[in-house]
Length: 467
Image (cartoon, rainbow, N blue to C red; front, side, top):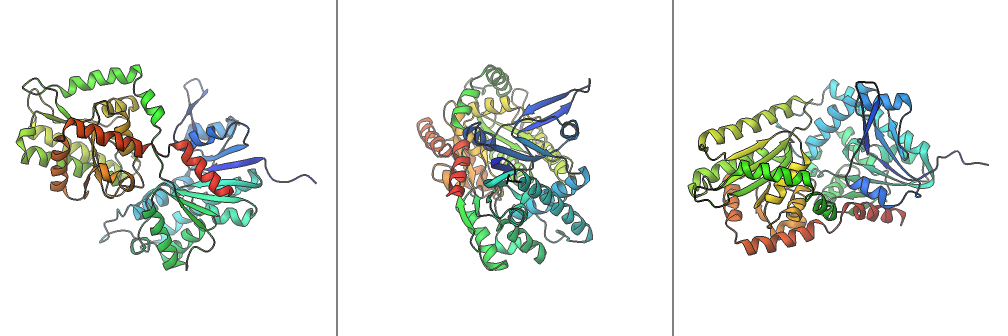
């Protein structure tokens, strides 16, 4: 008798997939390929591995592609109703679970888990169920399915009920909240999240700290891990890709423009650069980073006209008011610094809010100091990427609350992300490092930051799941 199961041997599930579509003026669909660790990982296992990526239709172009039956081999895009997706993605994943794991709530006023939250939670359940059912339908007998991130915490448990024959993994790209903070969630919801994830055979985290926090939550809320294994896989930068891409013509062009914007010191010497590249995500701590730079200029006037803060803050989640407000505050603080300290020949902060990867790489190459000061971050790949690309080697000012701290802390200048004065002192120290020491630190940072590149990171998890 023929099997009623699908043919996929390796399945990945994530909110965002490897391809997106836009509808052009003539009505045709244009496909745009994405990158990242999962794309690299799936390509590394080869075209004959029977791999399938299950993802969500995110925009009207994606939904139109699903309606027309347009797609790519190895990708199944789910057309979850737009209102359900919005509730699950913005209402729950990004406005509740993200806030819990990054400890972002102003607790005197929030969170408030009311009837509207419960309505949105039902959408989150429906969204996760759509993924679980698609995976169950597509997976061959005994296949491996690796589910990604906080958008899909319920999928492993749902999938386990539908397909007990599968090897199921889940990977968390965020931090995991400590027990007391995790228990801000309503008791039944906290238990549902944990039991959903414990439906997996194996759970992956970026650092031991986040894995231990998850384990502690399980001990406190559901009485332990049961038979689920825990693994730590510290996603690294793709050094080969970055080195090659950062020397292409468009990056060289943007370096010339940036050098012009940075300018030279009054004595004719090159100005030093403090570089940051982030999304305007609340956890990235961009405003305090700018305030620390202001403190540097105010408290150590010898740096005036001798340093420029190249700050690229690319808009994120602008459909949420709190993110729009945060982006506006980033712009306001940068403009205030330029107004207070700027001179006709010196703009202290070069701020750009428009995403441009080639320009980011140009800034990486010019960096004397990389500032990575999140209040909390699952890993932070920028901390790993800049030392790989920086031409002369850069110093890294790194928050102890970034996951990358576990791997890079020894060669970074480490800061408490809430301490603006302490961060200003760290910037001063980093800017003053002798060139030789800076280059040596940068070399060690690059080696640590590329130790587990994306393809190996994925394959390591796949091998562990297969046992």
